[in-house]
Image (cartoon, rainbow, N blue to C red):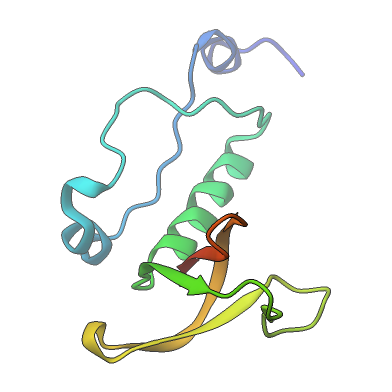
Length: 124
């Protein structure tokens, strides 16, 4: 590849930025979103790859998602998560007070064997 002025300028840049934005997502989440001007370090050689990753992150974060904590008592009983073994574990979360009735990803599970209690953090 010839060392053209454009190529030299590209190579000398310390950071190359790729962003994907959506006004609806920005207005929905407001200041909850990452506001830092500091770049997230990645190791993409090609700006198109970095742009594709930015667009994938936007696609993941664009739908409205909610996060809940649910305490489950009585660990002597089995706790089951829906879904095939080769997929992410899902939990059906129903809470009429929060207008939630949907399958959600079991993002975190904590156990307290002394009190026979499990804590689920579900997201989706």
